[in-house]
Image (tube, rainbow, N blue to C red; front, top):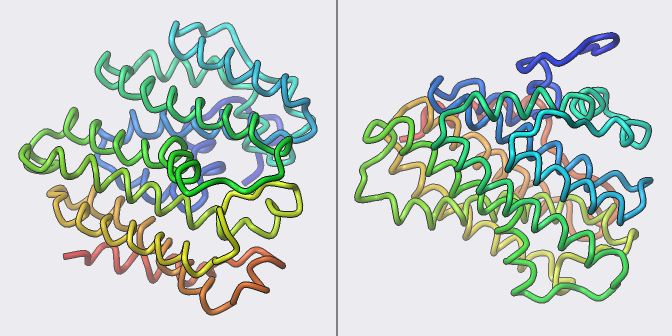
Length: 294
């Protein structure tokens, strides 16, 4: 998709920057799709800022603080065009220039959805700021506690957010009210499992850059932890009543499991040498599985 000469277009931009997760968002019922897509674009914006390695660390931290303030106050007068030269992805370049439009989308959400979006973005930004302060200045590996806290801050909280906006917008069509507490816990673990997969998959880039997220070199141990989290995620999906939401939740779970399979098959040496990805054909196979989730 070409973005040459184009301004902000919510649907096109979402498809460009969300890769396979766009399939999940696209199939959500309308009531959930708006807060989830707005939250995703804001989270992708914070991630783009945090990952702009050519920009000085303090400038990135200041930008995250500035964005957090704009999210809280609904201040539309902002963009991060100064980060554009440090970003190669065309969709991310448009996103950096379109912060005010994304904040306007946030303002158009209901007050309850806005508060849920603010809450999850606050947690994500705190995790990203901690990450910037921790790496690469300190080359030591994280502790188990640090890793699990970080995976909650940048992904586990998204599972909690997904649950909150599901109940907010769909009520009992989303899930039984008595399952809310269990789903908040299992949704958190599902998000942590998805993030652990990303961390293991990106070892080939992170370790040479001094970012040692895994507390030890036992990749198989952490793949096992990841699978335990994903199994909790299956319990979550089973409690979802709405078929479209069930599909949208099951798809990233199945893709994470397929990635874990490929990582195990590749072995530690290959994981540390290059990025292991599932082929596009697997994405469609997992989509069929997700549609048939019991």
